Length: 443
Ligand code: NDP
Image (cartoon, rainbow, N blue to C red; front, side, top):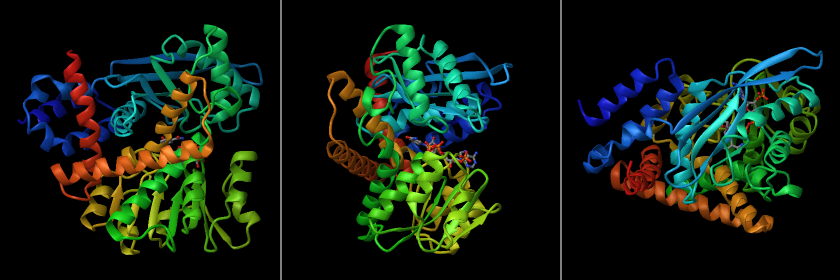
């Protein structure tokens, strides 16, 4: 058995019943093989055994009361995966599907993604199986405060700096920040994605979606000498990442024809009107179905997926494993030229293999959605310096970071794998920096 196979078997045995975590580990182990096998230093320092085992996994009870006075209990998580290159950094997800496997897959991915940004941030992730949908403002506030009451023991501006993810936006970060401050009596940049009046960074809200479009544009320019201009774009999701990816892709001349939520999806052949989407999703916290009630050119579908629509570029921006092999085959048949992952691990392994075999340009999540955490790291810098940069300053830094990620990913792919195998490129470039830091620091 090779070193990689031995580690893979040991990780699988130790993490039974964690399919999402194993999917993420398998993808990384498979693609970093040429690097790991090129130098015994990785095996001699047990780098793969160490990088696949979190520094610590914290699970805790989150009690709260609902509006009828009933006591309710959810489970909270924070997985601090790796801090070789900086404080743990990664979002908090509030969704009923959250479990240890999902938080660990997200935390593991975050190690390599954060490394790719070139900024000093380690990998972590957290959240809870609390479902924010249908909860009152008071219930959300009480949950966030209770969650932070325990989480506050484990985080800090130089230790672990959480941010938002599915179900956690500016409102939730605000309640959590307030509770942290009250408990610790410390005004520090312990969370990112904060509101602008209390330490938030301009362009953080837009960063993940904008960054996704910047890197896909970089890829299209490098390989096909074109960009979003004149392209039809299918987007899934209608949350933070989807909305700002749609906004930037439209600005660059693309036409967005789909958006979705967990109940269904809309098609608008005229191009999605984002003012309507923002009003429904950001202001009224409503469902995407209402788009088709308000925009006459749109159709609503409560079955099937956005991937059945003919498009040039597909940007999955909802959740893990939302694009499977059948969706990939449909997209390929319909002539898709590029796929950029806004969500974390939205494509199944079989779907990625199909895209690569069909020579569809494929930019994986670790590179494609790193803009969010990159601007979170810029928010940390601004907090430390007690400064606020302008929107243009942050946006320009984000553009530079995404281009740098593209170049690093493309060079690593060329050097160690196949040119344009950006999955291998991103994993290898991300891995090397962290592995070398771990070796330098000893056990
Ligand atoms: P939001 O909560 O703002 O939006 C999530 C969107 O995805 C909603 O439209 C939601 O629909 C849909 N969705 C969520 N879960 C499911 C599901 N199980 N099935 C179908 N649709 C679903 O989250 P974000 O936009 O922040 O996050 C989207 C993705 O991007 C996630 O994978 C996240 O990890 C990733 N990401 C986010 C970053 C950020 O900065 N926010 C940074 C990097 C990655 P509904 O409202 O019906 O639940």
